[in-house]
Image 1 (cartoon, rainbow, N blue to C red):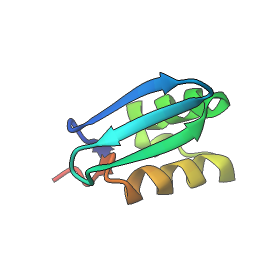
Image 2: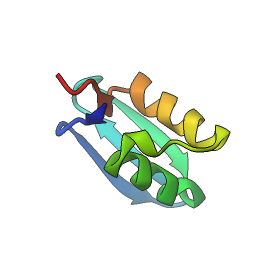
Image 3: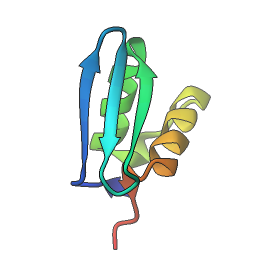
Length: 69
């Protein structure tokens, strides 16, 4: 898995929001999960906890993370 180059993240109030052009949709996380999201975006193989796997699934569903090929 890798981060899609067609996604962008930004801080908005108390949320860390991402927009995926592939899914044409937004994904939102509580601001306290920003570090987890950034860690997974840099290295999708770094999923260690249940919270990490929940974030990972949400990123995949919204096409922020895509297959390598």
